[in-house]
Amino acid sequence: MSPSTPAKWGLRGLAFGYLGLLLLAPVGLIFYKTFEHGIGAPLDAMTTPEAVHAIQLTLLMVAIAVPLNTIFGVGCALLLVRHRSWSNGVIDAIINLPFAISPIVIGLSLYLLYGNTGWFGPTLEDLGVQMLFSWPAMVLASIFVSLPFVVREVVPVLHEIGTEQEQAASTLGANGWQTFWRVTLPAIRWGVAYGVVLTTARVLGEFGAVTIVSGSISGETETMPLFVAKAFEQFNEEAAYAGAIVLALLALTTLLLMSIGGRRAKSSGAPIPSVAEVPVPTSNTKENP
Amino acid sequence: MGITVEGARKRFGDFQALDDVSIDVPDGSLTALLGPSGSGKSTLLRAIAGLEELDAGQVVINGRDATATPAQKREVGFVFQHYAAFKHMTVFGNVAFGLKIRKWDKAKTSDRVHELLRLVQLDGLAERYPDQLSGGQRQRMALARALAVEPQVLLLDEPFGALDAKVRKDLRTWLRRLHDEMHVTTIFVTHDQEEAMDVAEQLVVMNQGRVEQSGTADELYEHPANEFVMSFVGEVNRLGEHFVRPHDMEVVLEADERTEEAMVQRIVALGFEIRVELVLADGTEVWAQLTRNELQRLELREGQIAYLRPVQAKSFNGSSPSHSPGASTPQGPKDEGDAEVSAAV
Image (tube, rainbow over all chains, first blue to last red; front, top):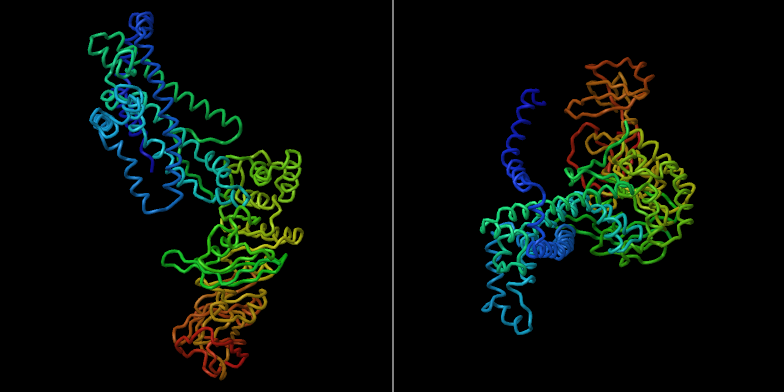
């Protein structure tokens, strides 16, 4: 039974109203505030050396954390789904830790580990490696907070596609590596892509954990979210709004790149589901009437 | 030559999937593994392909011990019930997969793929994706993909199980013809006895992880080794410890010393064949298979009293065939012998 037309419109209106009030209005207002007096002021605010450095540092976080988490995530998902073992439950629970723990706590724990009195801090300092208040610790924090996304996206897709395609590949002479690249990876690519987008968004926006391990030194260890927070605290509203817009644009670019990548895969052939239907439940038992 | 399995055992947790199974599949033959679900037939097939590792036993393919050989090196063609199509590849890409793995050059691959697509009647659909094919077409594509690498043996796991009745019938006739042309040793798994008898030269009947009997369709039908085979290969009525095929159940209107009284419960016309369901005095329900002519001659009506005379009955407990068919005797051990009783029950 489908709901009657008035009920349908009512629900639709409610959804739009809710989303509009909670999401669209605040984001739209930032755009409005930023470009209220033209593009000149925000452009100036974003071309100061501190701002440029913050953008570069943010992109560096993404460039290191996202590939590492993607490789780890796909490997880990394969381990969890394809190799049944008693240890899987433990691994599965550990992977969820970053979702369960507040980023501030993650930052503090890294501070304890790599600080002057921490377990690894003194040793690394003797080796000449500066972790805290420098980019390596910030990368670690970013990896930590964004670790589960690829795993969580890929695991259900791996369950969904099953093992028959992989078994078929092996009877046709493909070894494990060939099967992964030619059969498994193409089959899970939408799960991976979705995981990458979520990971990127998380790393771009990470504040809590990074704030503690970075020391937030302007022009040195300040990512864009830290830059925005500091600008806001110093009543430099123009810079704060402009920085927020830069972050939003970076996230949008990621989404755009993914859908362009998807479309290219489509023109090279494969029928591809829209992002909305990532775990594609297709029936294998369809038959012509 | 051909395929030999010796003493295969496989256990999944508490479940004994294969319990000391040995089979012998002659070179170039078409053999069916027939059995109900859970009988171990698919496990046996997957063990031959190397997709399942045996706990004990040996698999010999064309004279070579393949027990420790991984699936990728066994050179078997395997066809799955749900096709296992590579969904992100075209029909061409699917069929070419094994050849690309073997690093064939492009022109040769293309020739071979198109040759196979003609063979499975899919030429013209090479650029389609599996989602754009019907189930029957997908299964033929899967077959072409398995055959492309010229496997030593072809293994099909319930290949027509997911298809509707009409397509299934067409495909099995077609598989039969294909096998006559290619002569590659083929084993296929099915739970459908009609399908097995229609397609295969040799049948292996499995039950609860064991081989109950193997032989030609005629041998199994005429000389079943035990109760299970008799009731699984063909229809059967049970009269006490005797088993009677419905077409060996004669319906007459007058009693004599060899008949059993029964009431006609239902008459079902299935085209030329008529299915007459009867209930005996002790409540046993049986059915007799008559022709339309016989039914007209007898003028049977539902609710009428008639008399049953088993023309041919079998019992498997080795006891003398002197019981009256209606007597309910406890079931004897099923595989002690094959006492055949002709028109004497």
